[in-house]
Image (tube, rainbow, N blue to C red; front, side, top):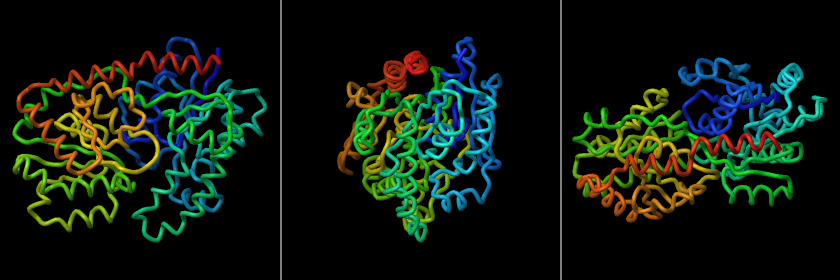
Length: 407
């Protein structure tokens, strides 16, 4: 029986984008273990006192899990050693665990873990196969990360160098690659001049246990709730929130005072908060910023909302926002960039998903969705669940992961 080890610096039992990104591997691998096809192990990093989804973690009780708790000093130490991810600091500890586990297949969650990839290949003698997952073209991620970071932006050249070295190492020592979508795969492989084998596996949000929206929505039927989620210290998400601030006058003209915009996510940036308080008190009453919601709080916010909005116009990768909204049965008004990697969903454009590229298109789409909601012309919940099952079928993910392991 093959032993499979998954190494990640994102807490797989957390609630934000990084956690969601791990599920396409950890959920199928856990099921393959329960079916007796593999032995499964996880090494992951967590913040001290980090809130976890205990229900999800409980479902992994039969998996051997090794936790590494991040210290406050890890971020500084990692920058000194030109490591773009603090988990690289623990590469010796990880290699010891690898030698103890003796895995046949090792999957690393991010190309930022290049030092770990190098150490495993050089210090672990067993002829194991190393699979590297790419959630972003990390050099592009750095380009947008330092906006709104103040003096911290002086570190951008150092970060670009450390990310380049790490991605290059991951490409060199990885035996097989996994990407979110074709455009990103072509870009990364071309930049690093690699011809190694690869596969596309998009995000997996949950299996199929859709939430019951109707029970909760009855409590919120007097107000239209628009929701946007994401890390609020990341510049594309900050810009998206500001887009919503700047749209309040137009939305009010369309909906009157019968709406609110919920902006929920981790670590709201100071610039975002300043922009919020620049709004006059009348405008602020339509905005609710929810900082650092727990998994349960986030779930309640999404279930109690009516429309998901994603005015994201920059940033690499594939946005977890879209699949999160689908799973919760919401119609989606999203920028074209937000929909990158979700091209298969184009059959739902104008029915469930409403793309836009300008503020006027955003307002026009909002008007269309509100009309459909008011006239009960569309069952968005059923449409969203059908789209999820059609394009993000759990059995498809299971088959893809099984296929990768058997190569």
